[in-house]
Image 1: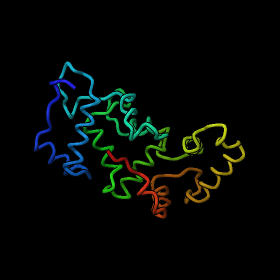
Image 2: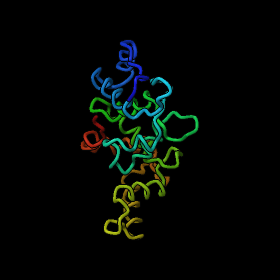
Image 3: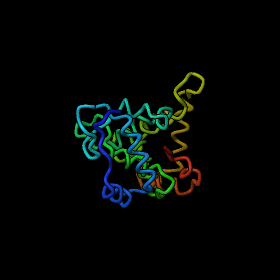
Image 4: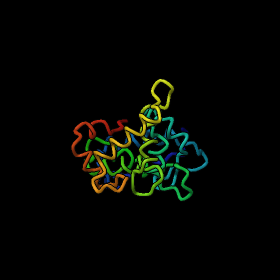
Length: 191
């Protein structure tokens, strides 16, 4: 990695522990992994401002096979240019939301944001179609016919769209998730 990578101070680690669902060991491991990805050898790694590009982040084994990897990075990125790059603090937020210790409310909030591809605060038919295509990998073997897709979207809306406005909002999504005990265990990333 080179000699320009700084270390986290005890104060930083304590602050990150207070602000996340991560343990001290998880934070230190996350910093090690982030440092390994950091390529700018000309400057020291600053946890608040140093950024890892989206493409590099999606190479992490924990994200590589996730069909939502690009969307996950974009949701957690605080980059002003909206390029999906992550600072160390963004990376910690991502890991915290996907950790075993995160609450159902936190996990479902971020899942909703990841699935809301157009960022309009609802899961509309287009968002649901993208979600389904991501989950079925859009291969010829698993691709749904137009009729199957429409029927599945109609079923999802019938089950989830409590106010019958043709979309699923965050509270409706959280209501559905609250009835799915497997959601919490499947929504995680472990370093």
